[in-house]
Image 1 (cartoon, rainbow, N blue to C red):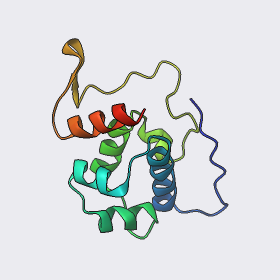
Image 2 (image 1 turned 120 degrees about the vertical axis):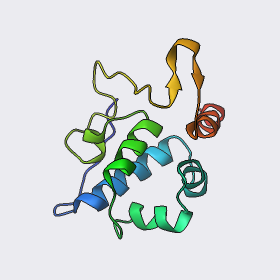
Image 3 (image 1 turned 45 degrees about the vertical axis):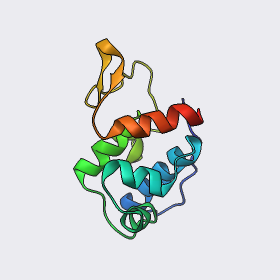
Length: 116
């Protein structure tokens, strides 16, 4: 799946990540409050990151990639493929064999499934 994301020239890395996370949120109908609650970040801090006013840590990039079933490469602008061919979703937050989502992502997964 490719999302069209014409990026303005000169956009910095943090703003680019924020823009792409926001597009994924929009696509999956997830609010800042829902996402922030699920990843342990208040809405204000998340909003600042989405606007590029505050930087993203490596852990936050990994978490966003896992939550939205994408790659860090997509988030940082190395590719426009949200889920590249052959992409295997990370199993960090799920027990694939049992098809059960565990951990703090379980409620977000349930929210996304309802809104799908």
